[in-house]
Image: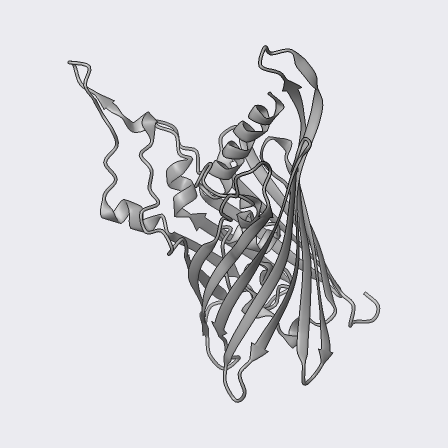
Length: 341
């Protein structure tokens, strides 16, 4: 049936994006849509000057994002197209800043068929999320707490689903300190209306992050430890099975360190305060789960750059997934507070 084709495709997409294939819904929320985020490994939690960052961590919302607009486009795997747009506005000095964002993913067209393999026509699939966020700075402190509220919508052929979710974050940040720390719970929510009769769980995530900017070198480090709600995230790769002369097959044995390291994402930003910056990231989980035996794929590696041009800023990221397919992310920022270019 038609739904069988879409389910198979969605399981593949979930495997690529969240590596928890077939267990959760709305996993597109865990795919980075901004170039700086993608270039630094895909799960960075602290980018204080990026109006896209609150989509991942609402506690980063601040007055410095006032009247900042960003649009993003991702040429994802197998010609899947993604996009997002964000905007922040300071209501007043006392209330603070509100942030809004929209994320969209179009999975393209599919050929439907019945149980006998007879084609029944083409159909499409897409996911959509709209969010609004706010952060509060505790008086006389460098601590911030933020929340995002999200409306989620999904459609596969004639099947639709709606849901709601929220992000909660707390951040320590000071202009006088070279380091920042944060803790975030993302995508806590509920599926209001399922595709069929059975409700599914939303792909939530608990993560902590930190940044450190060197004083004598124009370099800023980023570290994220994710999926803290599920310690054992390693799955044996069938390609690594070993068969002896008697035909007995032994599955891959994943030790404590190999499982622990998959929770880590690291990134480095060179010349973070200059008009031109370069970024490099490494996602250990992506590298471990998408690698090929006897072939160097560079899976898990990402890189990119940023270029400031007056009130405009352009960012690009290249993400390596597989030898036959990669992802490019483009981000354009526009500062409405500045006059001219």
